[in-house]
Length: 103
Length: 103
DNA sequence: TCGGTTGGTTAGTCATAGCTTGCGTTAGTC
DNA sequence: GACTAACGCAAGCTATGACTAACCAACCGA
Picture 1 (cartoon, rainbow over the protein chains, first blue to last red):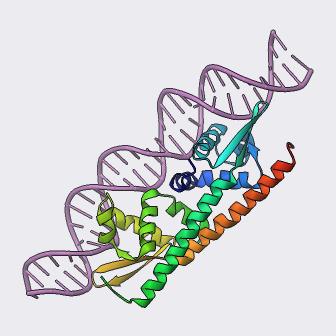
Picture 2: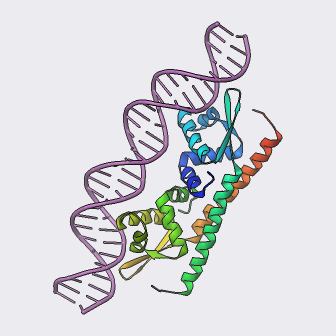
């Protein structure tokens, strides 16, 4: 869906974040990922389904294997989100510094 | 702790994200936040504790109220994290485009 | 054709954490 | 000194979701 909220929900989970980080280095198959993680292939597969459903990763079949890769565009959306977020917080910080108190 | 992983764990939660977004506009007290959210003051307070423990928000006492504000530095860390993340994924994407297959 | 590999699916378990309720505390106000 | 408003804390409930185990399907090589 490439919606920032859904993307953040998905990548907010620690294990999923590790998976995406690993895929950002280079694309990999399910069993490759499971080898480095303390969870079963099934769990990895389920995480990948979540990541795929929000558009964070893409997959392509290569024989019996399935190669998963990060979609840079999805990361760009998250990047833009925090960019704007950070800018706003800076402005609010500056405002708060001027007006010692209000309300 | 201003550690990217802890920050992302904290901001990965939907309600907490809303709270931080609201605080990024301008600092607010617990009851102010609770007014706009479908949860109790207590729940908001608990979320703020989590956010505070990872350094995403700061608080200062003003009489009986407690004014919470976003720490722009924490958002900067997250921003930098996804910035690097995105860059890496772009590189991986370019690599994958060159080498059609490997392993 | 058959065994081995890979991976998606489903059912079911279990722990985590988000939330509410109730109480105690502190700081302003009359 | 009482009264109230604003929070934090602790206990307990509950639902969500992360995970495993078992099964099935597809593809490949001998």
